[in-house]
Length: 208
Image (cartoon, rainbow, N blue to C red; front, side, top):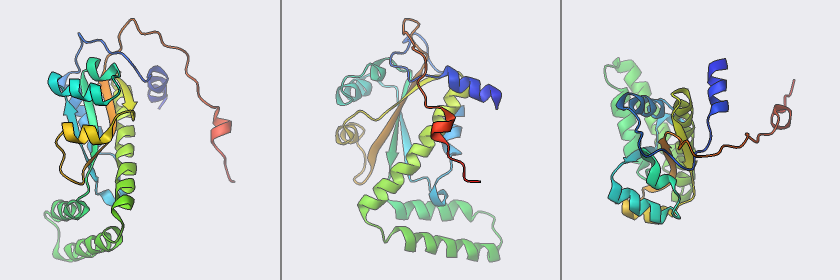
């Protein structure tokens, strides 16, 4: 844990990356796995991630992202996208979870799937979008932690035009660009100031 905490001290939201350095395939796969293993409500993972490297696409994202430098200098751009098709997500969950299950356990899984449908599909599209966004942000947090562990620099970004991103990435109707993570290695010229954080005593309230 102490090593992990020291890496959290090391990490910053980097605004400019070294364009001569790229993330290795091995480290990328570890970040992908951290996203895959992130917890989510019902285990449904109502999101997916588009990883952008193409220069033409990143230039368009740069324009729709208020011309922030990270879009042009990052090694990769991760766009976390929430899906509006919750029913298909439940189908996929049931299909994946049912492989090799004992018939009696399978009955319980089907009951669980029905419970998810009854709970989620009765919600409004706006409610589901908010719910899915919350889950995507959990996955973002796991990606950030994985980057810190790997000494890969990162910057979470919410400053962009979602509708424009949706068009650029040609998303299906109902899917939405929710949050962005840019990753790479910090430009050596970037000056980093000391971290500003509230004290634990100001953040944590214990009820004993």
